[in-house]
Length: 221
Image (cartoon, rainbow, N blue to C red; front, side):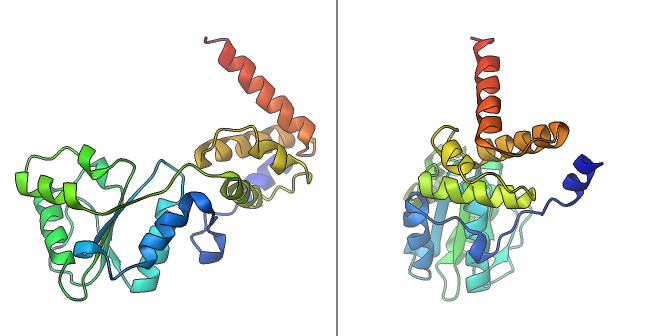
């Protein structure tokens, strides 16, 4: 019953300004977003691996400038003003993207694109679009530094309504993979084991789980 209640009480992800984990690894991206509407050609591409905060930053930008979010496929070309298109490298309509890039330079326009890969790696058939993509300004978010990773872990524990012992987060920051998905997977594992065994989320439990994961990986080497 305790385990079921914890699952029900989990909080959804928050994109509020105060919930963004700011640090050196995303400082350049934050500065680039803050430079709008002075982007070259009215466009900026926000690039980074999964879970580094691209969507969070993009949502904050849309809130700041009153931008409209459009899909990369089937988006509307009649909408004026600043626009956000997320996960562009997951697939896009070339004609639509070409025209949206052109529209971004108009007064009152603007276009923010997010992706995991650089525009130069996106498969394109239109030669004109290829040249435009190659010229787009890019802001990259790096893998989380200690400051960001600590903030991410704290937010994930809050999301699961877990209060870990004081030494757990500093211990994890130095030992886990530097990515938000890895941090989320570990917090979920800690939540599950703690709920099943009625043990507190302590450094001892964290070490046990990390050691178990290492042993399981060794079995496949």
